[in-house]
Structures are given as C-alpha cells and as structure tokens.
Length: 512
Image (tube, rainbow, N blue to C red):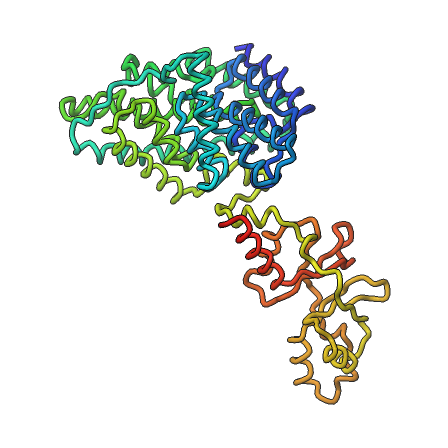
C-alpha cells in the first residue's frame, strides 16, 4: 500500500515544478500541440515524460504505458522537425509519425499505429501524409521485432463465430461498452473536480491517489500497473465470473483515481483491460445459459477490448485494427465492427466527446474536427488586418460625417474620444437609418448619438478561426483590431472579405 503513496509523493513535486504537461495521459497533450501549438512540443518533455511514466508504473499506479509512449514518440518527432526548421504542417506530420511509431511498437501492430495517428492525433484523416506515417509505424515494428521478438502483445484466443445469431449479442456487448465508457470518462472528470473542490495542491494529488490505489490493491492486486495480467487471465479463460466482476470494478476505480490524481500514464491500455473484463463477464453469462450456441467467454473478452477502446477514444477504426492485428482472423471483423460502432454511437449520442477531447475541453482547448479549422488556427489576425482605416471624433456632427462618408472607401468608421480611444463604431447602415429619420436636423445629431457602443473586437495575436466565429451569424463586415493590453486602442481593422480571401488562398495552397 505504501509504494503508490511514496511514488506519488516523489512524482508530484517533480512534475509540477519541471514540466506540468507530462502529467496525465499524454495523448491529450499531443493533440493540443497539433491543434494549438503548430506541432511544437518542448524538447525536455521527452526525458521528463519517460521518467514520470517509469515512476508511475513502477509504483503501481493503474495507468497504461501507451499514452506516455505516444507522448515520447511525438516529442522526438516534434523536436526533429523543429531542429530542421520545418513548416508547422510538417511539424504536425513528424509528431504524428512519432505517435504512430509508439503505438506500433507497443502493440506490435503497425496498421493500428498508423490509424491511431491519423484518426486520433491528427483529429481527422490526413490522406496526403498517410504514407509517411505508415513508414514510421512499419519501421518501429521492425525495430521492436528485432529487439523484443514478433510476439503478440496479449495471449490471443482462437476466434470462432459459432452462429450469425451471435451478431446481436455482440451488438449488445457494444452498447454495454458504450455505457461503461461514458461512466469511465465522467468518473475521471469527477475525481478531478473533487480534488479541485478539496483545494488539494497539485503536487500532493498523486500521493492522495496513491492512497486509494494502494488500499484497493490490498484486496485486489490486479489493479496495480497496466493490468495485462488480468486481461491475459480473461483471454486464457482462467478467471471466474465473480473474480472478473471484482477486478473490473476495482480497475475502474483505481484507474479513475490514478488518472484524475495526475499520475503519468495512458488511458488506452486500461480501456482495453476493462473492455476485456466486461466482455469476459458478458460471455460467461451467455455461456451459462446457452453453451452450445455461443463462443467461449475469452472470445467475447477479445471483442469487448475493442468496443471499450472505441467508446473511450471515439476511434472505431483504430480499435478494430488493434484487435484484428492480434488475431489476423477475418471472421472477427464483423463482430468487431458491430460492437465498436454500437459503442461509438452510444457515446456520441449520450455524451459527445472522447476521453481525450474531454480532458482538453476541461483545459479550455476547443477541438473541432476538420482540416480547414486547423488551417484557420494557424493563421493570425496580425498578418491579415489593415492598419489604414478612418477614425472620427465622437463630437462630429451627422452632416459632416455624411460628407466624409461620400468621399470615403470605408464602410465603417471608428469613433474615438479626445484621448484617441475607441468608444464605438458607425457603419453606413447607421448613417442611412439616421438620415431617413432626421432629415434636416442631421446637423444637430452627433456621431456619439448614433454609434454602436458595444463593439465586437479582436486582437492581433488571435487566429482566424476566432475571427470567423465572431463574424458568424452577425450582420457586420468589419472588426476593429485592438491592442491586447488596451481594448480601446485600435491598431487596425479586419474585413470579412479579407478573411474569406485568405481562407480560400491558403486552402488552394495546401491542395485541400
């Protein structure tokens, strides 16, 4: 019981002081680097992530090793791309290559590694770069074969589809896996909320999580570490149903507390383990009532592994090929597809986010699927704003303003006070409306009386995705660009037409 606590006490201060991004699963941080930081990961992250993962797994935290392996591989790829001074697009590709290599070597599954990088890390499939990612995955697998041998990651039972009447049963297994996936994702978030509510310092949280894991391990040692021993017990058919239920509940709680407390480790492997246990329990019940009509429970455990991964990651293709590459049995494809899609539909319908997306959303990082969105995020307002614009004094009469508008090429005027600070905006629409109402009294009306006071603004440092979101659904064609430190100091304007033109030009440039 003391080992997880001591490990947490050592890990917490080191991670918090040197590299907070090495805390947790690793995969969300890699996705964040792709989406927000143009594929850049700090160089020292590699060594610190390796150390924190070894310490977490060594002390018995209930986490996986694939997340940190992905983080480490991605860090190497990102660092190499930065060293070679590559473009942001190629930094992301090198990062994805490192991620695919990590998964391929970990599970001895090159296709799963390639699809993991394309489906999860790059958010959407990037067909243009699949060949580079595939080469990376194959190379990593060859190296793994040379040093570790070409053995499957788990003990794989012989798959047999006894009857096509089993397909609805695999569908039911997928639905159960989807429900368990939602509970798992929500529980991790709830654990983090409890830590926040208790105001426990971040450096102390792994030790507190270690108390829970150590306490559970006294009664159920299978929860310690990755959990492959328990999963192999299911796949070998050696565990009784009662024991599988016990380990499943214990693993669920221990993993939620380990990840929520900030231990460095992945979520992919625990999802495999819990899915295998769920499938084993489900298959045991079926075999009890209809032993001649259904396959043995290890077979259901194998399919349950993929279904749980599909639900937690919302990456069904990766889940399907991870298990298929372990069996190389085409008969398993139909049950895998049925269970994985069922699990995916449940999570998408009743929750909507993967476990990785959930953790990013909680950090304030917005994930939107689509390569065009990634493109917009890489373009900054400062590169497309115009610094030539017209300002008018708030005390200017409407008559004078009309005369200026007749000579001006600008559809909007920035209204400033005597300190040259923006107090509002006047558009051509405002002028037309006032002229029709005021008539000859227009000389008595001031700009400050017709201007729009609550003006939407943007800063030079923000990206074009943010600008698109501001323009969307609003009848405006121009945004004032203000100083990030002074929201009343206008430094330029951004036109909607310029924004659309920039988007179209860059889309053509990258060949989307």
